[in-house]
Length: 230
Image 1 (spheres, rainbow, N blue to C red):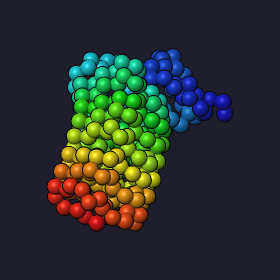
Image 2 (image 1 turned 30 degrees about the horizontal axis):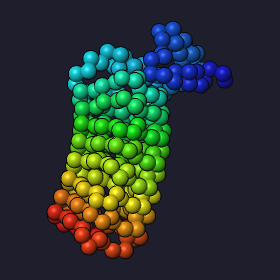
Image 3 (image 1 turned 30 degrees about the vertical axis):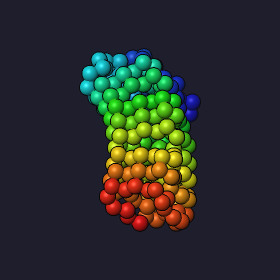
């Protein structure tokens, strides 16, 4: 039926008007729109209102807004920005600023992150299976969690991470930057395509390299502050 995909016109973060929502409610009442579709639209509308009324102080929770496709330019979040489970989100504005953690777990439609992205806290991109690379100039003030990012083949040469780096299950990952320094644990478990570790690698805590069948040997100048698990 021609109305079953009506919500597709709400592609931008601020497009759900009162008239749109009323029309959607009427279609739900006659059985054209399902209860799940209505619930997803309500989530999108809540996310829009949260963005519109956000005053820049504290965290911004947009989790599980499955129809949210983008964020407005100029968004600055003083705390944590939670976009966990926003499965339709396909872009991040180039000027996004997040002083706390940026949570993008399970944002499976996300294809890239903007160059020069700087996150004051941690960056969580677990299971962002659409990502094939990380941007140049990425700075992460906490830990980098990217378990299950199966499309990532390498990390940018200028990547800076203040804490641990968790790459478990990044099955396409083939290499790490030369001279890479990790301020916590480095978890490479189940990185099945990883063939070698780079010269100058420094890990301040533990190194995990279990179930890495392609990894033949470790570099002579490898520095690990705690244990190596293999």
